[in-house]
Length: 136
Image 1 (cartoon, one colour):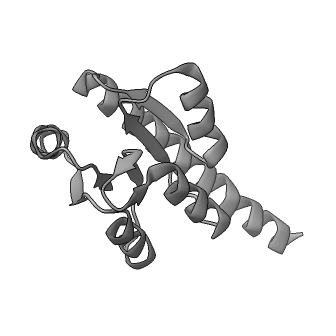
Image 2 (tube, helix red, strand yellow; image 1 turned 90 degrees about the horizontal axis):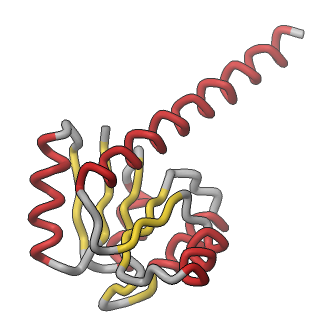
Image 3 (cartoon, one colour; image 1 turned 45 degrees about the vertical axis):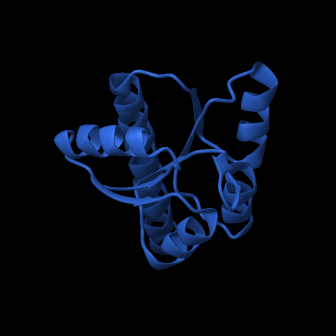
């Protein structure tokens, strides 16, 4: 499984990369919104872990742009902004999940796994629906 981690805190990135690798994930990392957008156009990811506050942009705007372009990759917002109204903004922008900092790595891993499983199941159902429509 391939993930995109978009985070500008180098200490957090180092720890998450270690945890994600131990869990069996291949992870691309960037701290820039522009590069994250480019990577999403060039690579297929199973899940994105996205910070809101980035040096060159806003994670909420980025996920919103992806959704407008039809990108359905699951996105977990990972941010220090954890007030209820900020979470609602994240979900309204198109995030699939929202985890406030600080957090426990095992919780993040469980959320990633749940989103990937749900996404894979939806793809299989979607593909089977096309097959069933074609057969009728």
